[in-house]
Amino acid sequence: MRLYLVGYMGCGKSSIGRKIARRTGMAFVDTDAVVEQAEQASVADIVNYAGEEYFRRSERKALEDTVRQSDVVVSTGGGLPVWSDNMARIRSLGKSVYIRRTPEQILSRLSPYGRFKRPKFRGLTDAELLEFMRGNMAEREPFYSQADLTVDGAGLSDDEITDAVVAFLNE
Image (tube, rainbow, N blue to C red; front, side):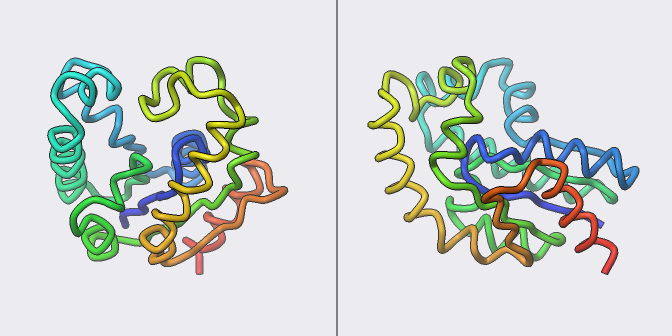
């Protein structure tokens, strides 16, 4: 079984994905890490120097590489489900879960490094970042909401979200 976690940048896909993998004995893959390893550069540098289109194609390749794996939890980049037909592809490859968090929750979770490593967040004040996230999340919602399960993370810890996803997998 392949489980794909989708949601906005900073919502906890990677940390929750690792917890799910540990609990279920599945492997864990982070598409951003796969792209960074293949390109020998950070996501921010790839976007800055090669462009977003190049980065999105690299993400798609990372997504396609998951086809060779079974029993894997895949944390996708925040924009991966939005580009091309990626969300439809995710749905065809396995189960998908949308981790929904509010912009305020995401802002509170972001470390200074977390802000720096995301090119779209760089240089924004907290107020500007919240405004940007509200608009950007609204644009992405139609894609994320196609997931098999939506877990509303408002008021939930990462462990509680992990519990909900593991229960979904066991249904």
